[in-house]
Length: 410
Image (cartoon, rainbow, N blue to C red; front, side, top):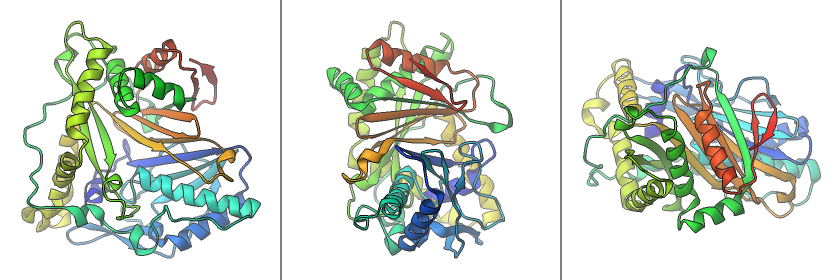
């Protein structure tokens, strides 16, 4: 089982079941029978996704099964728990609703990039089953034993020291929470070309610009006293970009923490300049590998490895809790999801989100449509409102939808 899963499995809870979700909206209604055949064909190509979690003496581990998942109409709140301790069930679920196909996956099975690749493969097989044509080319997708390769373990280097320094406690949002651990979900779509142009005016990337805007939006909800603590946005970075030959669906990412401590008179330009400097320092290969080594060091620590799982689980939960103390919000930029020319016209948009204890923002694009999704347990939507209002004031046309199905223009 991969190193990140050693943390994810014991850390999963009702409040945060550590489930990631990706959805593709099509221009036509989904045919369930074609979708089931597409899922079956994808799993024949990558049986790793049928893995279940087993409990060993020292670690949890993944074991392939013969379980067959059945597609179904969506019938649960987004990012509902998938992992049930003591019950070896599948760790992902494929559903449909109207014109939308979705996958939800437990984070021990894959990361966001792995979930997107899996859903892309299912979608390509779906259109092959529905409309015929040439059989899909899945060269982009790890198959067979490659899909289950643990690249974090493979690239762990004992001689690379993790970043030094103790992280200070970050500011945490405080608001009334929704009952029964339900998620508040706010999704918006906009032209990616216009947002890229806006970021370019500030000589920033889209990720840098959105990170700074998220920090600014959080800052507008903070009191003067609360600004004594830094706002810290944690950003997963896909390590596949540095190791293109090491294909895997399993967790293969590092993290960057972009922090800002507000000072009197801070402007958006000040926040963005600070964020850009930290991205420059932390987004290079060496820095990301150092972070990855810190995450992987838990498995390689002899004292921890020798402790039975029964005793180890509480310790791993403490490590996870301590890591979360240093985080205000999370931002995952999945990036552009492309499709072959004969499929792209059928794709309306690509969206993603994650369960969370804090505030999570996820962005993804296909064609010229950028989707930005906020998820949280909080009733208050002030951060989301400030975020989208600021973009609208900059001339970005935005359509916002919430889980209740109502749509309004920002």
